[in-house]
Image 1 (cartoon, rainbow, N blue to C red):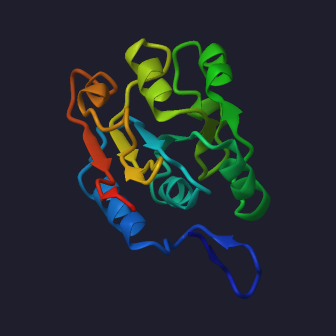
Image 2 (image 1 turned 135 degrees about the vertical axis):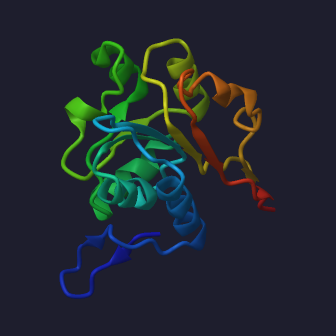
Amino acid sequence: ECQINPNTGNPDHKKLSMPIHSAMAILSTSFIKPEKNTKLNIGIIGAGTGALPMFLGRALPFSNIVAVEKDSEILRVGSDYFGLPNSVELVDMISSTNNTSGAECKRKKNKAVFVAGGGEDFLDAISNGDLQKCDVIVSDAFADGHAPPKGLDNFKAYKNAFHDDRDGCLIGNLLGSTD
């Protein structure tokens, strides 16, 4: 899902290989206009090996991006082969952020914070006030041949993850069964 620069052999996070990720990136960058001196909080559920979060981190340097992936093995592959920073556990992020997104203190330049944890737990942590609310949520999660997976297909679960006083944007991969 990540292109490799043929000259350097390194991951190229300036481009997206998959059309679905390109569409999600266009939507993320087109409809969101941050207020002056305001950072956008972007949550990505289903980070995979990190192509979309890394691209958005470069395209939206004024944003805080938290990318959640349930499968820690996928995060390890992203870290080992695609230039992702090491991930943190969701429970560790919640306990260390003191009601912030954690992205500002842990994010490296033009990169997202990658979190090992489930999308439902991530949304619950935001709803409970353990993490900052989002301006944009991108849901690209798959499980058991379904997108979105059961538990993330109830869009009411996303409602409390957005700011109450300004518009938000939910971008979801709704391909349905992949069987």
